Image: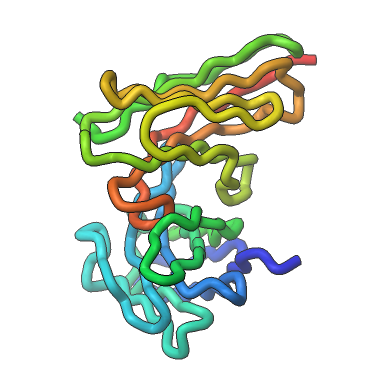
Length: 117
Length: 112
């Protein structure tokens, strides 16, 4: 299966700890997105990369959050000093944007579920 | 008011029923409209994707977009228990993959 892969699937951490999630996109996709989904809500956009460049960040992404995509392949999302309000499903998605056309739908991974106790 | 509003749920129907799921939106710049299906503890998977107004059919699924009313719909014919999931509408002004704005989702249960 060559879909979007996210690890770990579930992370339980104590408040104040740092956590890092990893996303491996579909190999030929040059765009990578992070979304956050809380219970009973739709996914909310956090940030996206085209290749290794981070092109947009939502104001939801506080300074405790940082995302990287160092070689334009996998990406990591780190949350520092976690708070209970950070408990959510963190979804990664990828797509292909070729020749400037922005019309390739997102393919999502199965997410990392974060629980902050 | 949220940019995208989705009919509240949950929704329960008998097998074989026709299901209508709806979203309204306020941002007239939205031009790309998608429906995603999400099973429990899984990521959303794309069901239908339409650009601008009109209808699109794929098997038992039909997506409709009415930009003049800022209203989109997903119809499911001959619903099956396997259709039981959460359905999310999503839209974007610039493309199907750039900062999608999602509705909150509606949970559908199809009873055998």
